Image 1 (tube, helix red, strand yellow):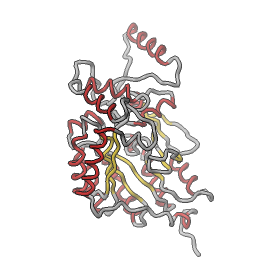
Image 2 (cartoon, rainbow, N blue to C red):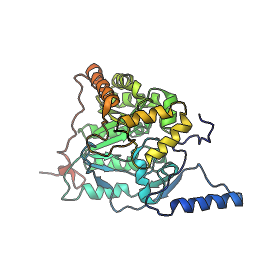
Image 3 (cartoon, rainbow, N blue to C red):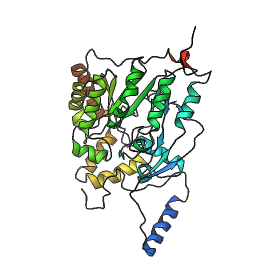
Image 4 (tube, rainbow, N blue to C red):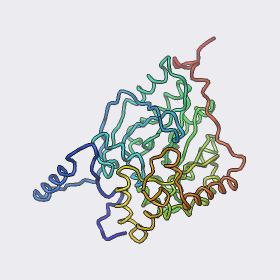
Length: 357
């Protein structure tokens, strides 16, 4: 670690300015100076849960290269603290920073199950897979307290509606009973994120996530119960976990995953500043090398916003990553396929029970 102050248990090491708040930096500097003079603690490392009351919960995904059409997020902000997370930028819409605020100010949507039910029972709604979560992890630590995700799964089961799950937390196994019921009608698929096989790397990149051992065990248990699992080996970060792509692919395949996906890291919006600050403190000996290799994947920038190339990357390093992924699929996933979910049952259950004909 760098000699600079490092906040243990968090990913981001500071709060960046909010682009939507014109006087954000000035107001923050005044606040910190006040705390210094008055002898008060300016920062608390405790997580706060803040209830919010959205009017809708299901979001249409317009990005053509994301791989989902609809998503929903029971929580905004995420205590997992993954330093590379693209969702950090969305916290600015709520008046918070994409840095430490994203990890410590968690917005809780307690009305999510009711909003979901109203959406999928609407007479004009036609079943499409809704993904939990397209933005922040639906099984982050807050879920232990609020159980919003479990209540949403109960709604999906009641109306026989297809649902996808993205998580890096073993807490998903708490809901194995509901997942098994959904899977009887091919209504669920789970995406488990694995970014390294090294606990040392995992703790730095994702300080409050489940251990690698627990994630692999989660894939195994889900697979043993015939619940389809796709492993998300993402993001691949040159100089940090790029050398692990083949071993990670083998590990998830050995534990039962049917497929895997990956992205080349891109540091969009405030994340470029947050990641650069973090790596200079967490990995000072290789910070410049890693940042330069990320830039090499995006035409000399830390980010590329072009659809189709932004998550694939370009250049020699990106090409090598894609070649390794192709090799991994040939070696470990030949003749394995992730099944399509069932869209046909929901229309018969729109009133909450099987319609009689």
